[in-house]
Image (cartoon, rainbow, N blue to C red; front, top):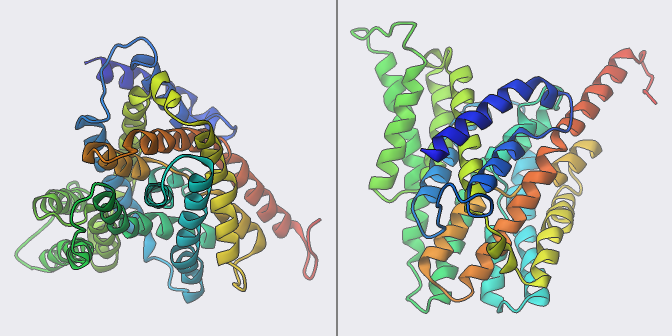
Length: 399
């Protein structure tokens, strides 16, 4: 019950400070991360959370699913084809480059062998939709940037999964999993999401059914819950199922989405805060002490060099506006997706598991601090630019 009490108090503090956070660098996610650390073994030891237990993984799993479903509902909205080029470039060029740079850094700066360094690079290559939502949902952020970050963070978790599983098997000296099986899990998750949306769309057209306006927002909740449970029962990828289901529900059954967006956003926000609190309770001084000296450098450069340089290279030759390129390159937060994959490594019991997870945890902590305290500053700059553009006369450019 200590977690429930701490979460309630932290949530109350966050609500009371929300207006201040909206116009300053105050980070509400950081409030929950610090609260978790204080009540965990890193602080007063009021709760016991283990990286080998099930609580952290389940909470992170549900949080990821919830955020991906709600963000997926916005993904297919743009009809302008030019809006799709940046996220595709980020996924097909930027993400592999990010993994490669982190791999080389980890291989050269720590005692990790190449396979373990590659596993670390793959785990830290996806961006996290839970933290990306902090910039995506702020007013003033241009639509192309919003769409690029939203789609990229919604898809790259699933793309990293096959490599994570294969590398865990290689390091564990077990038979390498069938690549076809892994691809089947990804394709099956996407198909499950599409089927769930199709069932809802078909049912909504039946004349014998009548949905009361008051309960209409619960229809997407029903689809999401069914997809989540089915994906785990059938061992399909739940994250792609969430993103595809959200996108297809919005596209094929828009009449059923009325009123859901505020509810979905609130649910996603609650799960994000709870996951950060539980993750904070997992952190200890001993865990951070397991990070080798070179690991601190790797974690910093993963945020300051690997992601920015890789994304800027991926955008070369594109029509993406310069300032939006810079913002997209910076906002590559590492979060719950990396934590989930790091926990898989720990639970697999492979060599170097503790070092890999410790570096992942350090990188996530640094990312939460860095990205959740700068999103409001970036959004404010875009709003200022928008105001300046509006005030400039025809043919004029604001200073």
